[in-house]
Each structure stands twice: as structure tokens, then as C-alpha cells.
Length: 168
Image 1: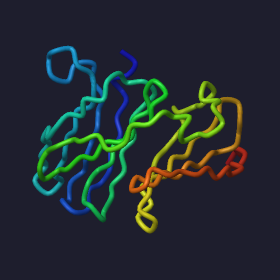
Image 2: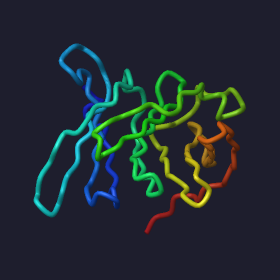
Image 3: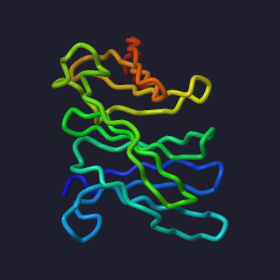
Image 4: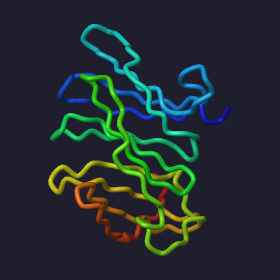
């Protein structure tokens, strides 16, 4: 399956571990789909599966970011025109969905069919306590930045012209 290679990692500075999220078609042996969440402790060279996020089908990828203010890993998921964010707590080994909204609520122009989310990324902006999603439309060299404030559910777009690819 093409989706088994969909992974992302982030460093958890509070717990001094690497957190890896990997999508699977059957996270619990019952046919449910979602993400396995693992930690790697480089000090003792040990991997542990800590939890799963029951996020449904894979769609177009997963991304993780670390919120150092809360100590939680944020797992972003784009699937069936939904923008979903899950909070992973390494200490309690839990995964809780915190955001689920129609993509057009964030994107604004309703033209969500041309999104190229395989070339996207997400970061946590700790200064403003918000999530920033960078993506582009298929065939378009402009990067769209969508900032989402989870506290009040507001968002705004900041189109930014991207640099043209140049040979080294």
C-alpha cells in the first residue's frame, strides 16, 4: 500500500524523545485506520509504541509539530476535506482530537480540489499560540499560509510568493 511510507517525526524537548507518527490501515487488528505513535529514547536506544490516533483513512499525509508550551505533540491530518489536529501526550500515552473543521472554513476560497497537500507542512507558532499550515495549489508556485488559532477557532490566509527552483 502506498500509504505505509507516510510518516513524520518531531523532537519532544520536554521528554527528550523523538516522536514518530506512522499511518496504518489496521491500528488495532479490527480494521480501524489511523496513526501509530512511537517514541524513541536515544539515551537508552529504545523504541516504544505509546498510543494510536483513530483518525480514519490516510488521505494525503500526516505531519507532526511540537508545542513546547503544553508539552504536547500536534498531529495534523488532512482527509476528505477535513483539517484535523490531534494532541498527543507522551507522558499519559494518549491521543485526543482537538480540531476538526471543513477545509474550506480555513482555506476561504472554496477551491479545495486543487490543493497539493503532498507538498505541505505544518508548524506550531509558540509566540502567537497558533498552528501555521503552508501549502500550495497544483500548478501554482505560490505558497499559501493559513494560520489557525485553536483557542478561538479563527484563521487567516497570508499568500506568499515562493522562490523559483534554481540549479546549484
